[in-house]
Image (spheres, rainbow, N blue to C red):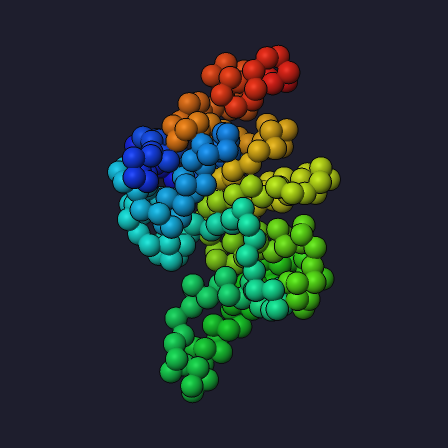
Length: 255
């Protein structure tokens, strides 16, 4: 699904991501962990086209997307959420999601002026896709509420739905369980499993180690921009380099 080869991103003299190579299989849950400042979000920004790499290649289903802008990468099937959920506060939940599907439409100003058949068809498709995504994340009951009036946990679910409304193949989730309680964390883990059951590939950045160890099929560990380990949760849990760099060292850290 996604193959990264010797990916490097320099900011001045600082290597935020340094010579990282990794492959993410289709239909799996892939996790990226590491200390703050390890380069995790920069890695996501490179994959999604927000940043252009200094060197290296990014292949999506065999297509080289290394230097593509983010809108083209999204059209090829990369959905994304961010650490901070930025939504249109004074618009309804459903209207926020309709925006997400617009990258799949072709209507322009002329279609709006004449209210063309294409515009009508695409507006219906965007609304249907938004409603489908909302039902998928179990928020159909808040479709007509304003974003400003829903809870933080519901906002995070809307962010999931917004990524799904773009019709992605792979979804990049940046700290999806940050700021939520243990019960809500488990519900987000269940939602990610549901996404994979639907045929999507999931890649997430997360600091909640219990969730990652019970959820991920494969984990990549970054430290100071470099990949220091890659493997199954069990392999990562018992890797002495990971324990020292991230999990804190000692028997408790590996538990």
